[in-house]
Amino acid sequence: MNEKEKMLSGQWYDANYNPELVEQRYHCFDLCFELNQIKPSDIEKKNEVIQKIMGYLPQGLEIVTPFSCDYGTNIHLGKNVFINMNCYFMDGATIALGDHVFIGPYCGFYTASHPIDYQKRNQGLEKALPIKVGDNCWFGANVSVMPGVIIESGCVIVAGSVVTKNIESNSLVAGVPARVIKKIKQ
Image (cartoon, rainbow, N blue to C red; front, side, top):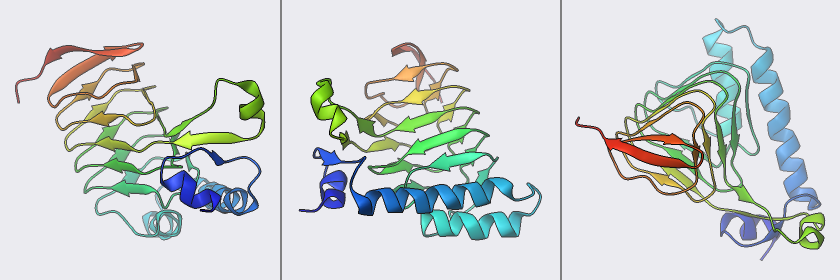
């Protein structure tokens, strides 16, 4: 199994020193840089670069730049997703967002975790676990979603929250670490 296959299957892999993965990330970084230099009103040109980054053009997607991600091709977005400025998708594993998901500025979706043993960490090892978000979720500014988290549909994540565990549908979530404050009647 090569390092990319290990990455996509949730095993420990060499994220920092594997030439194939480093090359793929830098290709994506260059595309994100290109996207972030496009005039915001030039939707057609923005969409062309988004398609290069993700490998497809999500229906009704709006991204306010700057935006960054690691690979792009591991991001799967539903219809009518809004991503505000300065968001980062660390997509070593799949980041899947449902329809009508709204993401405030400075949010991060982080699939990577690292060994606590510095010797293994210094070898460049990490593990990527997928993140899944259901339909009709809203993320306030500065929300961080950690590896392996599932957020079900209809949730509101309050600004500044750090989501470390799965969240049931129709929940209002806040805090560090985030916890359910109350259920939302939809």
